[in-house]
Length: 382
Image 1 (cartoon, helix red, strand yellow):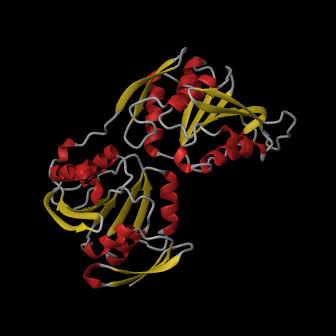
Image 2 (image 1 turned 90 degrees about the vertical axis):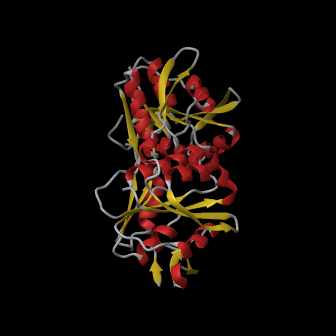
Image 3 (image 1 turned 120 degrees about the vertical axis):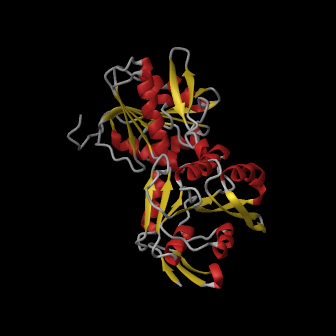
């Protein structure tokens, strides 16, 4: 069977269920665990829900191609992941890729679930996916699960609670493949919402998080360092990129007593929901939270930009934040970034004509990047 994806990549010759030969074109990478699952895929009918892919299009593509009458629904927390998957899977007409905080229930007689529990997946987030599928699928719906053998102790007991008629299809070469049906403990799902306080020496706020949101259950020390170091004034327009649960923006809104305009942006659907709930919880009205992975502000429309780029992305996200700030800031406006590598930020910022000073707080580098005051702004904004 020939399966064609969009974009660039190689041709992968793989084996599917019943020994069927698969030729997957324009696939950049096939994970070994995914390859091992392919021969065990059952036939699917109706709605097939995949709440997490790890960014790989292989399993959704093969399931859709082998089951043309089924409707495959991929749900990702991150808009960037969802957009890339949507583009890659565009040639397959029976796949939809959504970005949402949770998989939603749908009225359909025939449904199934596919759980991909990767080695690096957060334990609580994995529990959430397992419980949520059991909660939304009709009792007796087939569910097939792929998990790394080294994390079997983390996940197996949870699967026992939520899958009936369990059968281990494979437990070697580093992976476990478990088949079962929903209906084990369907009423037990909880969104695992956690409320806690975040504070600086002068502000205190309430925050809301869920698994998969940065940072879950506790205020991030880098975010606190950023909030304590940022210089903001009443009446300014302030942008926070990658806001997570809203720690920095909400603390600064508390400092200014809601007397400034805040725009908080994140690509994670749960983070956006949590930041909005945090704003409501603290009674902040001059604060807007947007879901975006490519944020395109009007040129010169902000006075201050804030960012706490994730470490796992190395320089990539920090570089993106600097590029957005170069457009978003008015002349003389300031970008505040918190990292462990202020020297690298200074080099990245200098390439876009920022003048940078590095401060130190709580063991972090706070890069204060000032846009030259004499730079002309071509936008109508002032």
